[in-house]
Image (cartoon, rainbow, N blue to C red; front, side, top):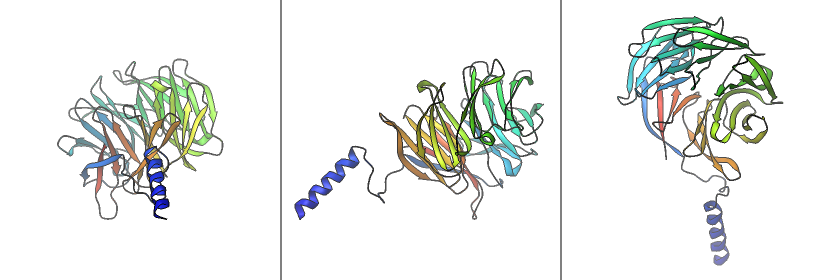
Length: 330
């Protein structure tokens, strides 16, 4: 009997060492560790998206429920500035070329603020529900999702709309890839490919019964798009430009941000269920590599590749102040 038990333990250990699924209840070390917590004591309500100034090592936080944007000095570990009086700020983008911060708000306005002082510089009115922002790495142009269905390309130097592109529903998470933008359209249960130069949708990929596809990430080197859905909670890995679904994986609930960590070949999904799910690339595809507990409602974050840190925005709840949770890879 002892020999059989020893053999069983040896086989189980070998299976885990070779990457097989461990027995239920096994406590695996999370692939990320909490490094520090930066309190935001004067912030109330929901926290939306974040932006990163790599040169200045500053994090910007859209405190939607507070009507403000918070500026955090990461080296000092504390807030050092604020933009107040905003109408539900949602999307942020740091414009390295002009050293300005762009802020998209639910009233349809995109405001531009001086990076050094946060003083207002200009405002572009998109009309309604300005949301996610992305910076085109080729030209520095700012692309904004807005309204009942549109992308706007904005010249960040002149602070003018260069082009509007009509969509069939409100755009949520989107990514830029050369002349293409890949856009989540939850209202249509679709992901669409947009030709930015032509100003038109060129492909639409139906998502079937999968609902609420909000976050999206791009791995340009491997021609792979990741999109997370809330109902059911699924993570899809999609080949581009063709649109074939390579994998469909279970993930955490209420996802709102996700990121590729290229050097570690990982994918991070930030969820309001109070978790970050981590997936690792294997020869057979991506596989679950661990789950990290955060806080309930902490569904937005940012992966700063240059600093190799994951920042997660946690709203005030249960007597704890709002905070930025800073995680480092193990």
